[in-house]
Image (cartoon, rainbow, N blue to C red; front, top):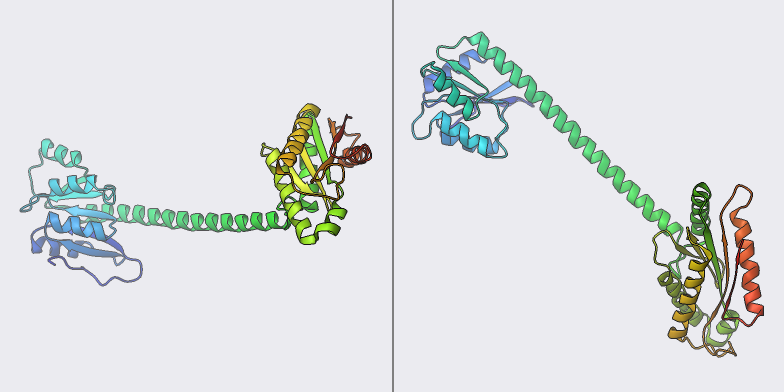
Length: 336
């Protein structure tokens, strides 16, 4: 390659690109630019300048206008058309006429400044110093942004893992519904929300009829399968993201329906009974029906400072046993 590195790169030196087709002009630049923090990179044509800009990062480009094959104006125009190089500052250093039209052309193709030979070394040094500082500040900001992005990514990963662990810790491993810990947490959260907005909250307590007899007859493995199938029916019966199903006891489940009136809860109870009828899981020990059925207690209330989640739970529990004593495979309800 025709280009060479002007100095041995030490640590994080700032690259300056000098583009000129004459070797003696490069020597002049080297004698003027003596800042040890700078690394002077040479190019002897516009084509070499383009190639270098694609593989290096430069604080500023000092470019001659008059060069064979591709002049400085053409090179600058191409640099401005490439995403990676479009923001590199370009200073034209030339012996061309000082007429305004020549300067205007330089600015049109993207130059930030225009110096004429012979140039004042102090002026050139001061301009390079400014662009060096701007480059270092930009790199510092980019590094801080990268570090911040990495920290945010790490925090997101940690939060995602925490959320996954919390989900696992609140999930019943058999039925994949919420366990008692999850039920308590979500129930209290929805209770507070409904209290704050003075909106109704409905609860359905569900118990599988004669489940102990089912285990005795068909075995605990089959009993676990029934629990899983019933839990799926319950989860498919609720459609809103805020509604949730939890395993409340051995064969008991709880459905919490925030912002739901009693009529909405009854519709869900009927949906559950219809789905179980269609599923038709054999249960010969449930004599009257011969299949798996459930009994339900349904209660609706508008939370106030004078009642609590335990009150509505106790109410659904009483209604559940009322449903069982009235023949099972049914539900009882009340609006508190």
